[in-house]
Image (cartoon, rainbow, N blue to C red; front, side):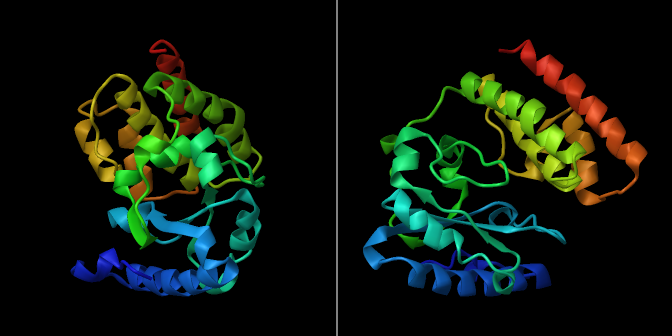
Length: 240
């Protein structure tokens, strides 16, 4: 591992200590899984980097490999021993073509979503990627795709019990972020930051942040959030 960006952090929490241990073990497995020349870089994204972890949070590790064929070996490092780390590689081909090559049972965003937020991620191995080398959709096109993903994937998968409510809440923050970007506004890439820039107390970002801080299994509360989310999606339709 070349870069441990968390070494300067103060007051590292027990959850973060567990995450760091998982990252170190996962990196050993990743490096062993493919030839050295095949591993371009490794990034960490998500709540660990933003220091917004809570119980149940994953540590998202994204190895970048030279060719699609190496992805299977890297996906295979996922195991209970590296909990709470989740390893999901991307290839240079995927980044350059903005298409996913590897099939997965859970929904995955198009590669340009990773590229767009690259500056917010932590590089822990290899050389930084050149963002200008990869395809990126226009902001409104990306928003359209995310709206469709909510209607066709996220909400139906939640209703079928295939993804958790917390995952749906998390994705709602990125939907709000995408809306602001489509309107040419800069927004912080964090749950707290997104909530704070919203002045409307009835905005769904406020509900999402409250549910992020205080999760609930109350079916009535969850159903109310889903209804409000559907209304919000309708409003977003008018932007694009």
